[in-house]
Image 1 (cartoon, rainbow, N blue to C red):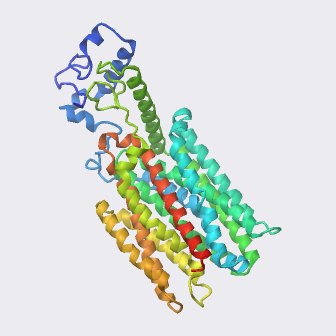
Image 2 (tube, helix red, strand yellow):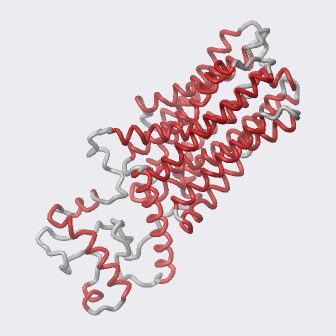
Image 3 (tube, rainbow, N blue to C red):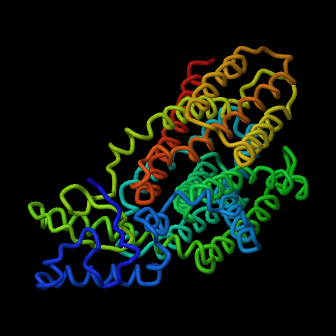
Length: 487
């Protein structure tokens, strides 16, 4: 049976009453590896011997423990504010460039027709699908090989580079055919997809408590949506109108400048923030520990020596060998599928509605753009509400996703002359979308068994990003199909 390693309160540090270490293996020196591991264990408990009164105390001191919420004094100092601001800025930078392009839907509709907006949505969101699969498959491997700090920094550099490349390309006045616009939108979408997956992974293991991680996820999510509000402000300041190409160029250059600021915020977050650096270090340790456990299991499948391989581990399996704490994606799917189903039921209609604004029956030319900003603002509000009023369980999300299908149905059956009702329906759909999707990212870690949670959070975040990308592409393909059949 699994059991926490502890020492008796009256025992000395070098006592052989340490559970899980055979006395013979220490006395006789049967294995240099065992001696090294025993030394590591002694060092880890030396400074805490007098504080531990029972075996449960040791578990509460583990760096990867998730039960520290009750011991959290809710202290939120200046460094925490800076960290949250940087996370928010990075989230904003992940979507700012392509949101600037999508927000110009009226401008592109006048140039290329109403169906061009569906094409632009596909160009922006299609890269998310292969990128999310690639991140789920290879990110952990390269994190282990090159260390997380380097790989996360590299992904950020690549993501911002692609986003800036596509946005600068939008400013070209020599050739702005629909094909060029779509290519630049693909670059923006690719950069945004890389950064979105990277930030979701980072938020999933940032800090040592579930509360810190939930706050980080909500902050990143809010930043992703807040980019539209920044775009709206830039639209007003730049004087960008429906038919003014000069205003569009100035508008895009301001977006480039803001994206550069977000890039420097990302560098500050990854290079200078202590908690981020510590979390990346813990991720490297957990990956190394997991791989070491696999090697131990394969090399000593028939041995039950009960040795401790790393002081961060609190438990061993029944045979005494360290278990592989990295779950497979099949296992993660099994424990997370409720959240994934909610995301699919929420996001497919959301992207279907969001890509249909230029096809709404109306005589008001500005209505598509108003619907666009209404959707973003309501989605942003829904994500913020999860910080103040987090969902209490998966069942809450399931009921919310089912109820949300009602306004989606009415959105598509409304006829011309219902502009105000269109706005109200989009606001309701988007608010619930923001709340439900963020709630899924917050509650999903609780589906993983507690003793395995810290070792699989980033992997689970990648799985959720894959689900997000599948839903996005599914909704856009449905919109494209409706457009082709003349709905």
